[in-house]
Image (cartoon, rainbow, N blue to C red; front, side, top):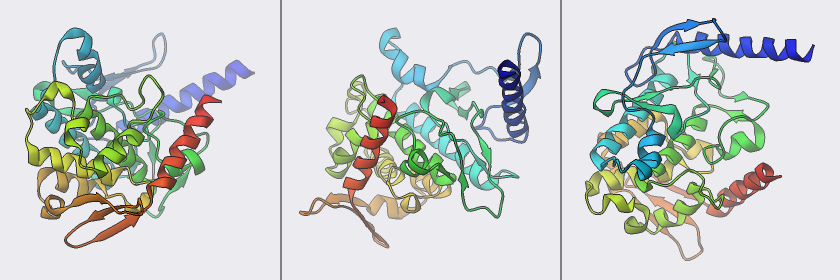
Length: 289
């Protein structure tokens, strides 16, 4: 009976992923060619020559390959545009729930494609959010409200994108060998505008400083521990493309009281980092138990 239930669950998961990906049509999302039920259940996707972003960012350390800033920034914009489509332009709203470097495939000219929709969820038009159990995903990318309460909406993916953007900037893993979260490590450096420590040393000074600032500020906004304070993916695309001039006037600073603030020409957001760090520490403890 247990084996039958596992088989039923596997089939249900496969059909769910197939149903979602079959409705997706965007240059920055994986293209379904077909599927196979011979010797297992398999989706057939378009072949992409450059593999995953994870391999290019992290596997390149062993192979000697190098992803320059121009390609990294193009990839970041491509991922953002893909998520904007899923959240806002797709016939039905889709929350991916597992945005991470290994789920980003790279095609010709390093055009990014979001793949692996195994955890993706439809979000009905009249639903603000969805409660999901069990909690699934990848440690380091999970938004606090998701891993603590199972709350899923577009801002869940926005948080994960912020972590992924930090990976692109720093060349570091979402969780390092000491089990430290990249978001936790980067947060104070973003507040201090410590570009030299944040930027992947392999890049040296070979990057566009305006693009780097946009990427850093966007990542900072996306990993806010309060979901409603994170920007939408439509706004993120505008930030990265330089279409929203407010992002170029943003300053990240730290007050004497230890509270981080984002100063914008048209807005002022104030929040504590303590709760954010406590949430991530609690999540780490739960994972390690």
